[in-house]
Structure formats: structure tokens, C-alpha cells
Length: 426
Image 1 (tube, helix red, strand yellow):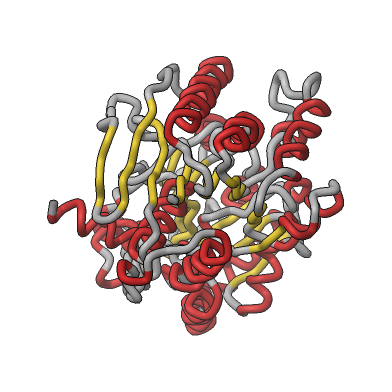
Image 2: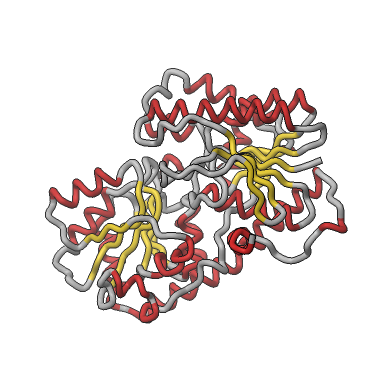
């Protein structure tokens, strides 16, 4: 009997869900479980790169499915890529899943639990859904074209598949409660918080940060945004705060990443003549600590209507890097409460650009306060959001579902950095 983890991207891809799923797969394999990772052959931010169909990294076997490659730039192309992954995953499951196997199904691509529910039932395998976000709620709330007409049908199908799963694992209690209100059986629901790589992402002193020097930021107070410029994130408040601070030559906004809204953000900055904003591309994993450490404080935003459906994964990396968080969104949401609990930043409501600018200025003018919040951020990470904590909870869940040969179990902590080390050594 084996564990099959299915996500559209896996190592060496660097997307958020890939890092999480790859980390868990490595930990489970190292603890003696027979683990197979199932993914596409693509890299999310490198459309020219094609990964091999079969691979092995340490104890982890990875099989990559053949899918279409229209890319992420158009919704129709993305939909076809999603569909082709659904079909390939269903066929692979019918051919390779066995009675008693546990299949951990992620939410990239959306609705995968619906497609795999019957094939897994036919093969006698058990489904565990890892809900990184909730579809179709997110698409309906964002008004994604084509979802409105089929939204109620998609909701019923999604709920049907979750109700038939062995477990449904959410990253936050708000999502777990929402699923309970939708009638998903309580016996199937569990909450295991996300995490970040606390070994690969550690605090880097400003004076030791090569990226700050390379990007001419050594004498600036840097406000960072790192990650996806997605539909679920709010930028108007951030941009309005940047405009309010445009006459402060000692403050820079550093935007790292890509996504649906990046072109709109860049256009707004050009139209308003701002020269206090710097754009940089995603940085490789080996420079992630420096990349996150290049900012003195980090921005995180989330539309309040999506609080129960999404958790911004960048937040955990910010905590690991030991930097304060400036959150824009629901003041009673998951990130806002964590920031208040850990005393590691500030939260403002959407539209409160004046408040955001005021908090930035306060941190700029009070370096000791900024440093204290930075230390608190790392302290909160080590207390509540480490890989060891998250993977241990998942291992406990798998232990309750699937026996593993004790002789093969490695009692040490295994997480994604081990994947990279073993890959280089092979």
C-alpha cells in the first residue's frame, strides 16, 4: 500500500503548492511510507522547461503526466491544461492505484477531487483532500468568466466529492468551519496549518544581504511585496500608500514576482509617475532568504470575502525570514489575528492607504521597534509554523490510515531542502 500525492506542480518547481506538497512527500517517504508524487511535466514560471516523465529524488518517486501546454496567459488555455491534467490523472489512477492506497489530492488544478472520486472508489483506494484553497468559491467571488453559470453545479459536485473522502484537510479553521456549514461530515474534517522552510529561509542581516547591494537599496527603508500578483490580492491600497510616500527618497517599495495583476500594477505606477517602486523577478530558491530579507517589512493582502477560502502562503516565508508584516485586508482575518498575536507587524483595512503609509513611516522612524517585530516574527514562526510541526501532524494522520514498515522509518526531520540536497548528490 502506498501514498499518492497529486498536485499539478512538484519539485523542482518553486510554486507555493509545489513547495508544500514536495516537502510533505519527502517527509512521508523518509518516515517509511511508500510515496509516489503525481504531477505535470511543467514548471509554472518557465514555460519552455519540460521535466522528465519519471524521476526519483531520495526515497520519493515522481511520475509526471503528459498534459497540454497552452499556458497561463489566457483563461481558455489554462482551462484546457486543467482538463488534460484531470484526464491524465484519472487514467493513471485507474491503472496504478491499488486497494488500500491513500491518495492525497490537492486543489491545483481545481475540482480534482470530483474527477478522482469514482476512479479511486473503483480501485478501493482512499481519498484525502488537501484544500489549499476552495473552488469554486474563489472563482465565483472574483467573477472569473465562465464560472457564474456553472457555479452552483460545481459547488454541489465539489461537496459530493468531499463528503466521500476519508479526510478533508484545510490550512485554517475558518475554512474548516465553512466546509462544516456546507454539510461536509465533521468526521472527515481536519485542520493542519501550512508552513515554510525554516532552514532555507532564515533572517539575513541587512548589511550582509547581497541583493540589497545589487539592487541599490542599502540606504533605503524597503517595503516588500513578494509572490503572486493574483486576483485574490488587493493592490489599490498599497499603491495609494506608495503615492503618499513618493516624496520620501529614503523609502522604496520592492515588488518581486509575477501574476495576473502585475501588468495593471506596473501601468498604474507609470501613469502616476512614481519612481519609488522597484520591480524584480522571482528569485531562485537558493536566494530566497536574501530576497525576503531585502525588505525591512513585507506587504500581504487578501480580499476580505476570500478569508475562508485562501491563506496567503507568502506570510509564512515572511515570518521565517524574520520580517514584520503589513497586512491589508480583514482586520479579524487569519493573518491579521496572527500578526496581532505575535506582535510582528500591523494590519489595516482595505482602502486605508493613509493608515498603511503611517505604519510604514512609524517603522522607518523607529528602527528598534522594527527590529523587535522582526525578531517576534521569527519567534512566532518557530513556535507555530515550522515544517517539522506541519509534517508531524500529517504523519500522524497518515499513521491513522495506513501502516508503514517501522524498519524503513527515518526518525529524523525531512523536508524540502533535503530533496534539493539529494537531487544534487544523485
